[in-house]
Length: 442
Image 1 (tube, rainbow, N blue to C red):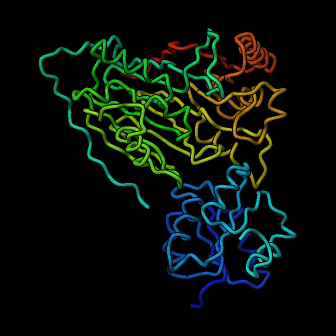
Image 2: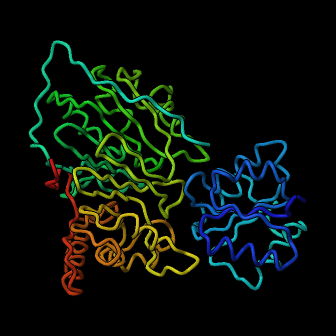
Image 3: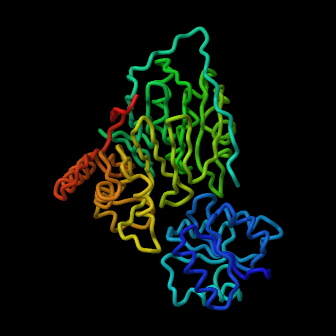
């Protein structure tokens, strides 16, 4: 079979097939790949002149494909067009950084798509793998000390907010009733502890775990992404320096930096905040957009968020309850056939009991800062009630420049909107150490 001119990589059947048909009608030989994990093998086997790839896909992302192609001597001359609804300026810069020849925003113009592709092929436009398995951690044996018995009964789930504010440009001098620590959420059962993000809030959580000798068979730390406010406290998480603990670090690789590289720079670099290496056993799990059974009865699901850089959303399903954590995610509220993030995300987390979601901006401010990666208040309230059908909405990532009075008004506005629209939705704007309890199945 003659090699194709173009390989399209897109997991969305509608967009992928439309792109293929448009380019086929224009006279090109085209291969469509809908499973991104097959993209690199297909490209190597078929050696096309051009790759057209989406960014956010299960498996590997379009950025990963750019990086892999342009770093391979045999493939580096293949041209790449990144096509995505994730149109943040920083994403465009990253696409070019990793070797893309052109960035095309969805929804693209079907009338000019083929001519755009032709111009890239003619050189007249635009600037010039499965995750490794890790062993299941053994049970921890504590010598010469007695662990505190959990205060939770079988079936009880406690989620505690240790930090939920954004990181300011300057450290604030004023106190806040909502706290100043950055993202960290713990989810506890009688036997297990899950931690989402390692912002500065994780430091106080770690101190409490060690001080109260509250030991768990497993501590799972799930990082959504590597922006500083979500990893700043990781190197000072006290259980890392206690050999009685086993820590499982979970996250998605980014083309700029892998999860393993983040761990190494945090724990062992001379530039890290910690001055001693960890003593705990540490496993690193580099995950993709998929469903993972951590152990029987506990499932962790992950999908890519609409936010600059490779950012994960997590849903933890345990004891019959669903907890979704999405601290950095822009819901647009105007989904089209070409921009299906809202629909996909709604299906992913539908029926969540607790829905922790990005709500950085008031409605007024969102009009100024939309399309930059964070959500506005009213869109989030409507989405939580109509798409997710959540029981409780916890508004996350409070803007660091907002005063307590500003945040009070946001919470009042959220509650008033839910009431006015007849939503069966409880809205919360959390304070540090505030807990939300769920009763699951023992």
